[in-house]
Image 1 (cartoon, helix red, strand yellow):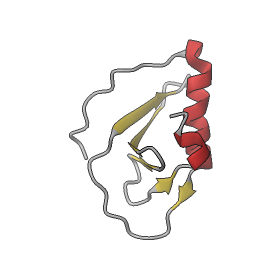
Image 2: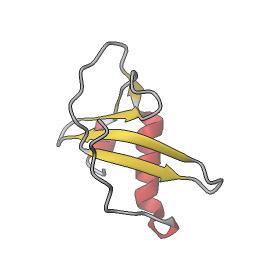
Image 3: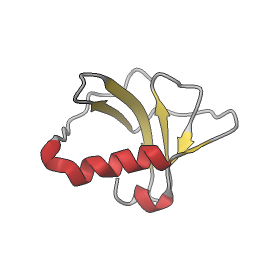
Length: 88
C-alpha cells in the first residue's frame, strides 16, 4: 500500500464544507469485524491539524460503497456511510 501517489488536491480553512464531509465520513464509518483482503487504495487522505499533528488514511471509493483504513492501524477497516459517499 505504500505506492499510493502523492495527493494533488489540498483543502484549507476556506474549504470548510468539503473538510467537514471528510470528517463526517471518518466519524460515521463502521468498523468491520472480520479479516479483509484489500487492493491498492484509490486515495491517500492526509489531515493536518492546527496542533501540527497529522492523520493519514487509505480510502477506497466506488459509486455505491467506500472503505477507509487509518494508516497507523492497517488491520482494521471501516465502511463509509452510503449517504456520504456521493459527497466524497
